[in-house]
Amino acid sequence: INELDRVIARDEFIGIKLHPGNAGYPIDGCYYEKIIEYASKRDILVEIHSYPKEHLQDDVCSPSRIKNVLKKYPNVRLSIAHLGGFQVEDLYGLNAYFNFSAILPDYVNRFGIKRTNEILRLIGVDKLVFATDFPDSRCLKPKEIYDKYFEILNEMDFSPEEAENICRNNALKMIGKI
Image (cartoon, rainbow, N blue to C red; front, top):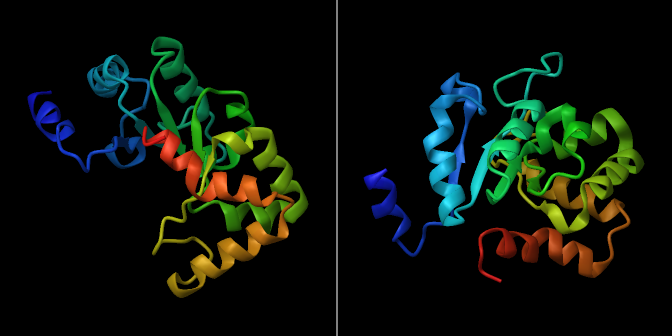
């Protein structure tokens, strides 16, 4: 925690990312508790990697576990990376930001543009944050990622103002810059 205090004081600090899949510990377990409590008390953004295995409702980064975190720390400023994977319906209505890194092309491949657009709107345009996970992608080569993401977004029905919020303003709000 003392190291966190030192890092948080730096101007470039914007938040803490927790990756339960890499650590092998469930996000709602005691392993992360002190960090989440610390962040919640200080209004520090916490981003949680959430691309659980589809068939595991209790994967270490599953939406059900993220909901447990929010029950215990309802005021934590939260960002959920990868929209919760293909368990996104379990996250509708949560007080959190959601980035669609690494998942947007996968949604379009599975659901098509229209249904993907509906899913993003169900999450809430005011909660969406543009992200790609560049250079990683499950279905694209690195040089294709940005063009494909913008192609997908251009096919959706977002107004210019909504697009600017998704691609800029929501991220600035999320990190406390506006």
